Length: 452
Ligand SMILES: Cc1cc2nc3c(=O)[nH]c(=O)nc-3n(C[C@H](O)[C@H](O)[C@H](O)COP(=O)(O)OP(=O)(O)OC[C@H]3O[C@@H](n4cnc5c(N)ncnc54)[C@H](O)[C@@H]3O)c2cc1C
Image 1: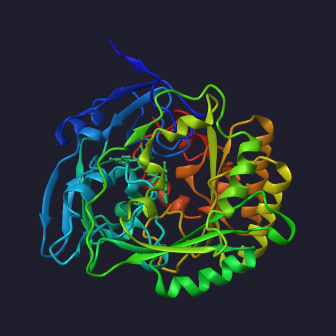
Image 2: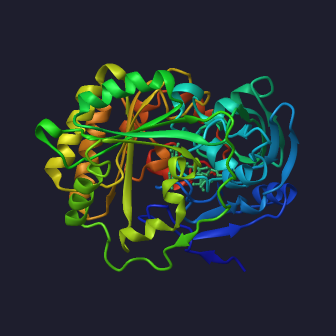
Image 3: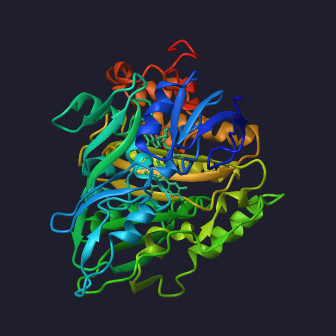
């Protein structure tokens, strides 16, 4: 009998759906589950995507978390082959350990959580705070093995099946199931990081700090007080970090230390608490307006990972995340317009990140990062007022020739997708005809069940 489950939902908790779920123990079973499925299929990693990109309502989800074997690691070259359900947290814990002189192998690119799978990191071609130096995750994938619903297993790399490789990186899980991947890790002289936080008073100060910092600092991003307005519009705290030679640190644990056991019955993030938090946070550096430290990378790269299921704090209705990138030429005006809209709306956000992307090209046909400035925020779901604000933000991003990030999105319109991702026409023929997702249907990459 087919068992339907409703416990797979988006990280923002605004979308849940009925799925038939498989959790194959090995790659052969995963390949079989695809080809024998009577329903449209989709791979699922750790479910850390905020919107509906990892959901497949009324279809089959292949939960890849038991495909978690390390297959080969060459300590001399840093080339790692592992199954697609291995998490970045596992690579850090097992491979990225300090040697006697503090140096070691490290992830070339990591998003703001280590609890994502290698398959999920490839399918969204994720980026980190070092985009201006290392580009996206997909740039460091040497090859991958892809299972298709016709039962075939293909090795894809820049040399073998290059079109399918380019479609699968950032391909939102729609080209097939990634079974394993070969990654090039990077050597660092010290696993510890030297990190600085600097208070800034306006958007124009952010752009000056970004320009000055991107030269000497590998990891850069800023928190912005999105409720500040007038002369203070865009004020915030700029964070920058780099590896510290000669000092090693032990990797963080493979799981969160604390967790939120139940969903808060009311959002812990109402507009008053957001206003108070933002005002206090902006002042956290005291009179100096600056701090620096040397130590573990965990609080710098993964501040939210300390609390498991922190997404429950937003209450039963959940929250939306919005992330866009706009080209450098339009960035100052577009970001100011977006911050003004947010300040006027009163729909505050505590987690607001502003960052410049560098010029290194993304390898995927649908990769999100492009040269420019990216703004990411989350908003508790309060109904039409929240959705209206998100639509206005989308309009500003699209008018500035920008694009929205599918990994974070629940509301993007088909027009915004088409304008932001003109390569979708090259992408569509590479899709596996039996794969589907809520996102793909919503933005028109797939028309209902017509592909089946
Ligand atoms: C706190 C936090 C911080 C974050 N910071 C960043 C950031 O800085 N930069 C950034 O880019 N993203 C960031 N993200 C988003 C996150 O990195 C991505 O959504 C990532 O893809 C999630 O990986 P996952 O393993 O949870 O995959 P899921 O969310 O489960 O799935 C994501 C996509 O991958 C596909 N997929 C999963 N496994 C496979 C497979 N084996 N084969 C084929 N397709 C597969 C799914 O179908 C889906 O389309 C953040 C998320 C959180 C919660």
